Length: 277
Image (cartoon, rainbow, N blue to C red; front, side, top):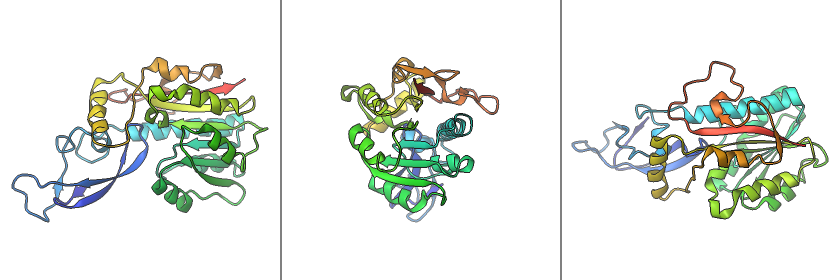
């Protein structure tokens, strides 16, 4: 990607959770650069930002966003094809990209119903325009914060049948909830509203990779919405009381991979799928 010095540029990137976000960047000219001259950002010029360095070509791209997306694809496809789930609540949707939740599910079961939840007006505008259902199914969009599970449940109940199993997706979103906001109680409240046979798909970033953790500290200081990495044990606690599907809570690239899992490298996401019994 090329950006012009001295101008504001909108960049579609991945935040600390791997979700697609839009960031406006003011480019400063490199020493000796002329106004209007295109320059390629390097790893140093990204100021070690997790958001930008993961996505700009030539900046040490890690493939994190791809790993998060592939985890979502595999988990949603498994629940739709092998388990028979037909209802999903995708909380913290992020900007539309390839293989969104409804596309994965409705390719297998066109009658699938999906509720997307986000509190970013830009995300919601793109979602309403691009995340459109096939005629047999339904997609809906809820303007709500993950910290308000009762509002999410109430809105989703207008579209989904809460007497039948539902899968809740929390893909990278709980990293935006600080520990003092008790993210585990948020998950419990969401699960309490679901009938037996429902599922939780959850993944989030961990502290295992020191380079990623340090880069994220720079990202959090930039004024962006903070993202909080957690120990794998804290990720596992989100599944308390659920029946974990094999292989359990693992690095996301190792959850039922369709090819040989890539070396973890600088990936730090852990996740899994659990059933309410």
